[in-house]
View 1: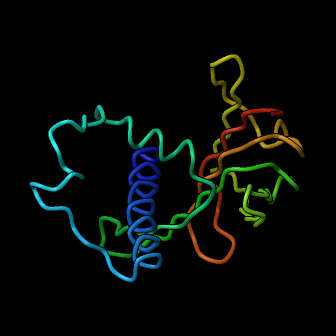
View 2: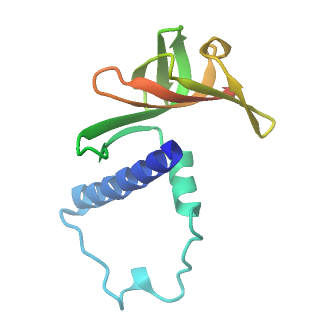
Length: 154
């Protein structure tokens, strides 16, 4: 469920971000019509899920808002980068664009360690400065880390 939210949010952020970038560069966004080159029959549709995987693979950090079952808004933050600080209370991720994102570590934080293409359950004490991580959390200010995926040293 959490992965679906991150993928959906990353896809939405990328779509909104690319539209905003196009508008910033050209001054307007021109939608493609059925007969335009952008929607020609020679263009192949990406298999389901592959677009989301590509977007997530290239996502550095972001934020999106969803509505929970009771109608309240929930802010989700995610960051991919190098751990620049970690303790049993906090993890700091330094991203490729030079920003740092802080996430509070709680008893509910799930840690996965990935090596040789396989993931295993871990603890926050298994995460070290210099490791490459993908962290997702909820909340505003310093979001609470829900999941930490540690990819090890890269």
